Image (tube, rainbow, N blue to C red; front, side):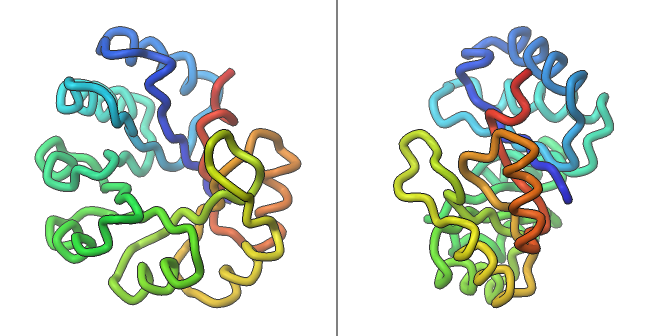
Length: 184
């Protein structure tokens, strides 16, 4: 079961030193297989993204991604990009830059479309109750989509305990993605 850390700007604000400190705390507690720098509010995304990539490299995180900006991900030397569910049209461009591409999906149709367009993996959410994310899909729906597609699926949304991880693993998910699970 692969683990995927998603950052939360509430932990570090807009400061590169605070980000580095927050990452040190999180990564000394648990080392994920994948990590993405996701911050929709900062004006310092390139600076913080670079700090994120360098810190994750120091911890030897296998796949280091930036959120949505595939050109910056390529420029800064990230392993890949995590695209939003409105960015299906740039999957091929991101792949052409040699990036590992994960895209957010929330329906079976989106998951199938991601596979068809060549995404390397998807997140499928929300599986469990998660703040401001709408009605959870649940485990049966996760199992249905896992059985329908070949692309690796990271279960996302409300995964905060080992029991949640065990449950999504039993459904056949490739991995789980979370913000709150990784916060010590």
